[in-house]
Length: 360
Image (cartoon, rainbow, N blue to C red; front, side, top):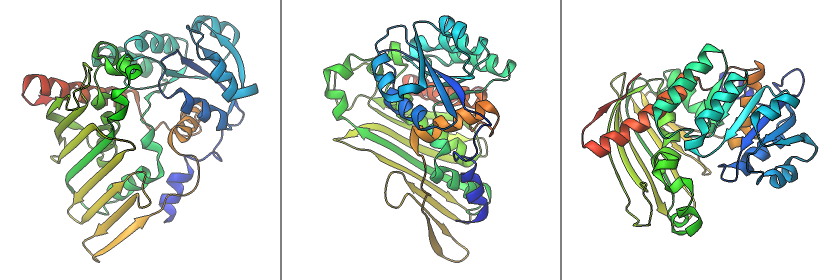
């Protein structure tokens, strides 16, 4: 690893801590997504000295207390009640998409930095005023695009931005998860499987990560999309289990995404970027997660990520450090809003059979 890559990755590490541990509010309910991962992240993040829980249902208190132990300083049924007794600097909000926007607005109005589990809305129009509110109050508002802090993605972005593969010609992505979950009655009744509550299916839940990475890695926004969605597995859902999206970047590059629940278990995660001077291939979650080729010397190189926090644990640490000013946020309110607008433009394209512009 070269010195520049090491510096970028080190900036994400726990050694770049706030001057003193801070308090974070965990705002959730019985169907809060990735709750166990956020509990683990809060427990393992040294910069988090205390956690206050807000759960109107009260259903998660036992699990949160078990995972956080003495770090949990109080459990409340409303954010207003929590704020009367506690002084968090940030809120981690993981809630059903339909009910999340007013809670995010309340946290921002209280002066808190916010990380919101995606999609955090069922229409981009409901997220737009939240981004404006965050910008006006100079507060972070980050969707849970945790892959942005992944060491492999950081290195891939460095390679692209340093012109290692030249001008980008094209991009191919796929994010494939298991069909098995869709066969379970519990899942079929959850908000993930209902468009009115979750905004959509695989594309807005998992495909959103890869569309965000397409823009993060390339350094260019997606400006136009076309595509299809379908329920190929035939399970009793009113959301898609399969999506195919083609897109155009502002810099003229074209790309494609396959997003679906196809496997019996596990995930297949691929990003391939071709440029005028070489190519990059990311096979996330494998023993060979990143390799790239240079036209100049005809050599293929590999990157092995360093040891350290990964996934949501790494992202929680980043969110807290960004809230304290220890490092710049990896995702702005406007970028959070823009990836949502890209997703909903893809849904409109599938519904109308016509390509759609992504509005700013």
